[in-house]
Length: 236
Image (spheres, rainbow, N blue to C red):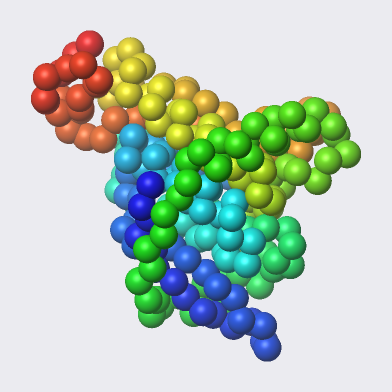
């Protein structure tokens, strides 16, 4: 997929970072805190597809911070559901090798005001290869290959490395396709279509972190088109 991004070069003290954002916001996508009441990503096909591409880009960009602003998107048909899960947060993807502390993020975020355009291509075959490598070794609890969630300043940070970001990309892409085929999505209903909980570190506590993926068609729902339907035909 071709991604249009906005690139920034903010500084924190003497250290300069490379930060990118989607050129166009994911307006119909929302996320709640995976460490809060209930971690969930809600999106339509476009939003989930572009989010999958951003995970893929993050996998191979270990010197780059991927910032996905999600707090100010268009209110969803089920916005109350997101509120009941603890409310919206932004998303940041970054490699643990970058060494950026989440507590420094507010200072960096204030500098994201004048970016330059950037276009990149993601490589699905490479992403699927590295996702498969993560699946082969993910059963080892001592592995560092997990998406480690941290929440600070209304931002959910998922900190990982190449293979686990690739695995998350494939999961989100599969969820985007699965959502198109779910029963009754043309009526605006939410449908659980995937999860990133398996990419989070193992946790035996009573309330472990979780991050599920749900699909919701973009309004007006009568214009939603499932595969095999005529254009703008409602229903299943």
